[in-house]
Image (cartoon, rainbow, N blue to C red; front, top):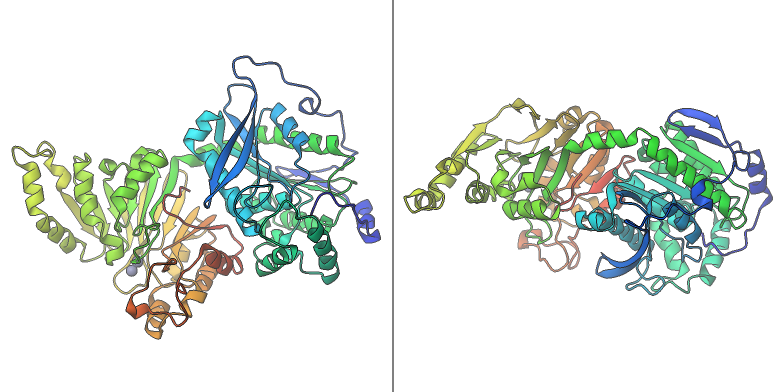
Length: 617
Ligand SMILES: [Zn+2]
Ligand SMILES: [Zn+2]
């Protein structure tokens, strides 16, 4: 785990290493490879500086990456040349005595930007440390790199982000890659498997002793606390499980003769079992820090990075960018300022197709247009919408979508599709705003030249294909909620997306997804439901989906990515209404992301995320 210790070489480990036949599997080709047998001359980037580029010289820039109220110290080795460059993030160990600066420099010489940072609560950074917060910090660093302004500033290609981590950093790299489908590739070097550090009492004892002596640069966590935290996450932090989602991407497993060797072997076996498309595994007879094999380490990593550039995965990735999912609102009727009413936009090229129009939709759409640079969701560009059901949390933004879209420049009628009652709702909204519409279209009105923008064509639907144009086919299927309700499947030239709306688990969703690219589904945590009054529990049992049910459903539906949204939750400070007075104390009805993560992660092996407003997938 911690890099600076002297390695204890148990006889068993040494034996297994000697017998180890390493394999190199790249794009389906299995070639024998082990270090140093495969050692050739070191790649140029390891031993020689690149040609001087006066126009775009390399550089070192320092900045702060915001993460959960703390400014993380981060620094970027900028590669030479105009770019855009791919970026390697090098999450460090715990506490991080071996920063792998030599590796960072080689990677930069190979033409990649390299980002290093300190986790919250380490090496003087603000806040306190936990393994979970380090996971969060890493996700924020990725988000920072994807920010178009930062990408432009640092000549970085936000689509080419690779994580390479050693020890605890290897765990972090694997975690981030397995939870973010857009991470291009991951290298785990002598990575600790935090899900297993409590598994063997003897090994636990030995590790704990080491940790206790080496946490000086870490604030806010004792070794015992970190072990207890790992125990709580034992299931979702067992990296062997991540093989399922990592199998489709390039993975480099670089093993040392150390305490993490057996876990790394287990991960590589799991990846092979799942026919990983681009697994490279190399074992090196050296200590945990690769102390006498630093050049070997750099050479292996650089060769692997060079191969990434020539693999076909980039082309596939480019192709998949025509269609995006933008979460405009992931909330419920709870007036959570961080979660707007349910609304999702499916973007194909320059067009947006909405699902539901919860309160806040127009402002969130503008925020997505500005912050995520997606002009298709400018309110004036919103022309087609599908509604899952007529509950107010899904429709209270309807009048704003009609009128706000119109005043923002929509010149054609809004086309809306949904269950019985939609036409009546539409007529009544237009009637309610009669004075506004008349005033805006009278001879002085600002919208008089495009009166059609205030009109709505409301289509009441039945299951089946409900919409088709040259970019998309939309199929509605029946779901089970407190009223007539539909889920939708969207087929675009490059992706398939299914959204559940509010519903009990139904076979139709499984059939509609059936290996789809993205499934967006509601979920209510069991821990929280247990604290709800009986009446709510029985309503939810009929008309909503628990985390356990969703895990089971998603296992059968096999989406490439599961996005969880619409979770009833009262964040700290937001009081539940009297009907919902919880059985246990204040703040008891808060469904934290960790709670969802734990409940889904312990039951579902596929890739999933807890959706947040303005997330783009
Ligand atoms: Zn709802
Ligand atoms: Zn509902």
